[in-house]
Each structure stands twice: as structure tokens, then as C-alpha cells.
Image: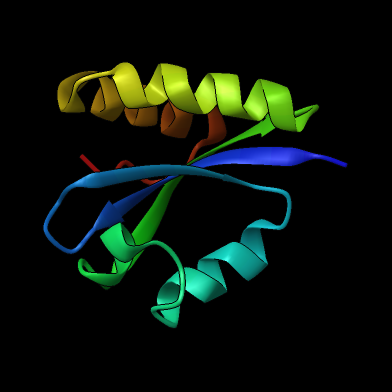
Length: 91
């Protein structure tokens, strides 16, 4: 089963990082206000980053690494990701 580390930019410009094995379902849960309390209090949000992982363990480790970054470095990670994928930049 594939896992994904994802980052959301919340309405207050904060960045939430999480993992899921079904990203679409998890985003839907967040959008309906039934996900994390953090995101629920900061709706709406925008998906700004995803990273595939081969296992739950690796996804958790990567999530922890990302959560340890300060906001500026998270934004740099997102910019790098978007340039590699030719997405619009968010910052």
C-alpha cells in the first residue's frame, strides 16, 4: 500500500503536514471539517505538496522531518517541488 506525505496551506497561511494512504479521501475528510482539529479551525485550505512513500513507516519518518522545518524552509521545499513538477508556485 502506498502512502503519501502531504502539506496543506490553511486559510491563516499556516502549513499543516500529514500522511495518508488515500489522499483524496483524507482531503475530503479535512474539507468537511471531520479531519484534524487544526485544519478544521483553519478552513479552507489548499494542497501545496505531496510526496509518495513506499510504507507507512517511511511516510511517518518523512512527516516528522518536514514538521521539524521552520515555515521558511517548508516554503522552499514547496517551491522546489512545484518547479520540478511544473505546477504553479504558491509562495
